[in-house]
Image 1 (cartoon, rainbow, N blue to C red):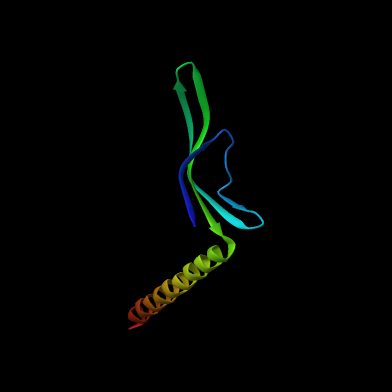
Image 2 (cartoon, rainbow, N blue to C red):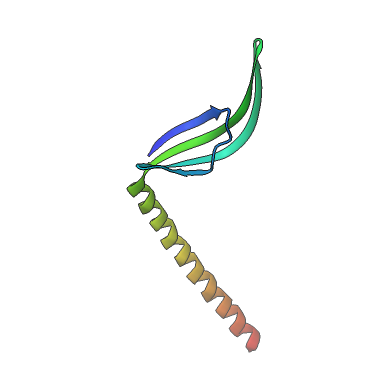
Amino acid sequence: MNDFGKVRSTVSPEPLVIDAESVWINSNITPVEETIGEETFTGFEYDMIQYDKDEFIKSMSKQNDSLESQLTDTQLALVEIYEGMLM
């Protein structure tokens, strides 16, 4: 993973970009207009992170496992509530 921190561009970035070797995550995208001296920058500022494709797949797999676990916990809690309503 390479975290490039805050970057600026004159073109609005896509939140997720996949190329031949990497996955790029662009987040916190905000329009920016700044005047420095006589020149004005009009564009976008955002956080950019680059992942190796394998690293990104592993990260998504971990997130999926976590979400599945949370979903199971929620379903069990709802069953308990439903059973309590029937009694």
